[in-house]
Image 1 (spheres, rainbow, N blue to C red):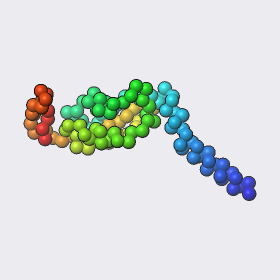
Image 2: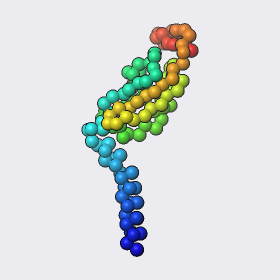
Image 3: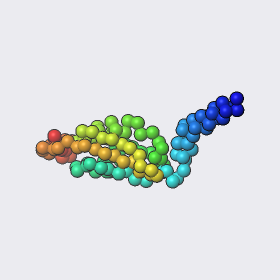
Image 4: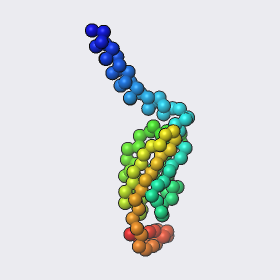
Length: 114
């Protein structure tokens, strides 16, 4: 009977760590988002990606990143994007860009046309 309680207690502790640790770690300055790393980009700038992600001040690497892939993929000239975390404080954005064939004027700004 003691073995059953030990297994149940261990499972509860693992569950608590699994769901509670990110919420607690999100508050630590050590895991504050300090950098956005852009890989695979030739024409896209990291400033464009950061602006599109609209990261709030004090964002943490433990904050949800669901939907970031679609947000970055929606930028002009981006075919595919993957956003992942790199601890302790970096978001890594990998993109596959479309190859531009021309420049066109749109709203007073030159844009790449694929």
